[in-house]
Image 1 (spheres, helix red, strand yellow):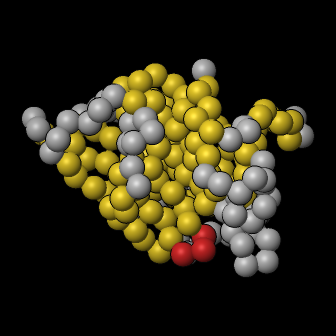
Image 2 (image 1 turned 90 degrees about the vertical axis):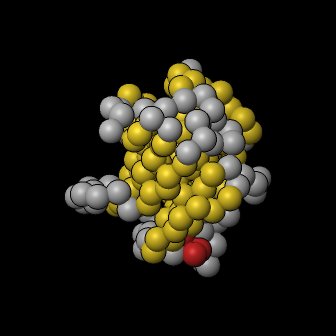
Image 3 (image 1 turned 30 degrees about the vertical axis):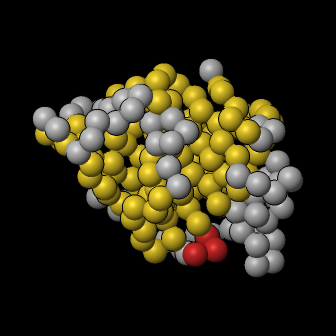
Length: 174
């Protein structure tokens, strides 16, 4: 089940595969939610494909916890992978995105103590070995609000963004 928050997401054939496509126009920020609404001990993973057009590049990512939850995003114009809580940047690392390649994402939210939660994320180029350790983390003490997993994107380059292999799974508390 998909819940389109905004944008004209559509299923498109890509060879023998099907992908979710976010068109390259109009230029704005778009999101789609999927999977069950849960509050903790969940992980979302997906892969995304985008291209640059001159000096313009898309941004795209995955999220947990609904519309105001946590989002792991690749921002090629900043050469960064970023972790946001709603619209607030919580952590950032250098990430060298390559236009015209698939990028893998994994983001999880899990309880680590009685009253503590950890958000962990990593991104890597599809086909390469992913990072062993989490590259972006944040800790919080207030209980997370239940929400669905999501994908998000802004086609700043004016070219479509494709999403594939969307999964939501339970993870164990630590």
